[in-house]
Image (tube, rainbow, N blue to C red; front, side):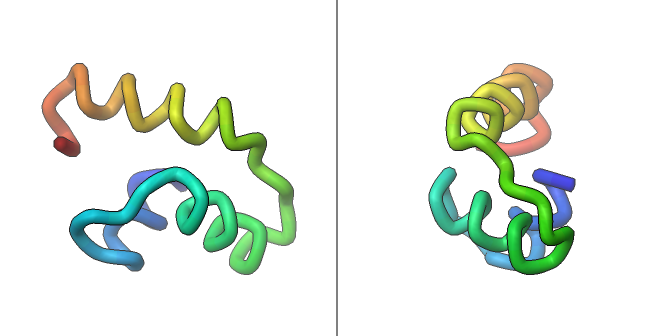
Length: 49
């Protein structure tokens, strides 16, 4: 879901807009720490930078 939010929001997006996008689209509150942790894992796998 994080990756889909990144794709929807475009390059250069970061945790806060991603968290808001997840809340708007899924109606679930994503903790900012979990968003950044997921982004870190995606970056380690070279899926995002």
